[in-house]
Image (cartoon, rainbow, N blue to C red; front, side, top):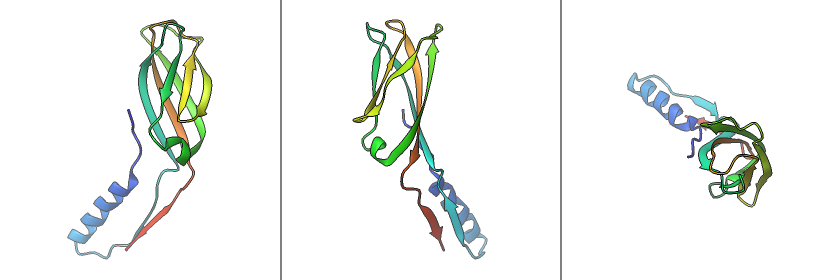
Length: 117
């Protein structure tokens, strides 16, 4: 369900490759300023579904962007009934039992520069 970008791992791979070639290693990298989580959910008998977020996702992120896609049948009335609040958001406007793919992107509130030598 969670697919967060991790540039630190890529930086470590580059550093290891350069070290194996006995070259000086100076790297600086900016992590991507946002993280995305995604999943699928089935709507309840009212055509709604609350989506629970991972612990602290709301605390660490802001400026949320939402994407909804109906699966199996059109869902032209799908919408975000409640924006992120208290670790969840709510999807509504679909037919009962419909499956919905969702994606939530949040801008990280603590963008840190990684500088390594």
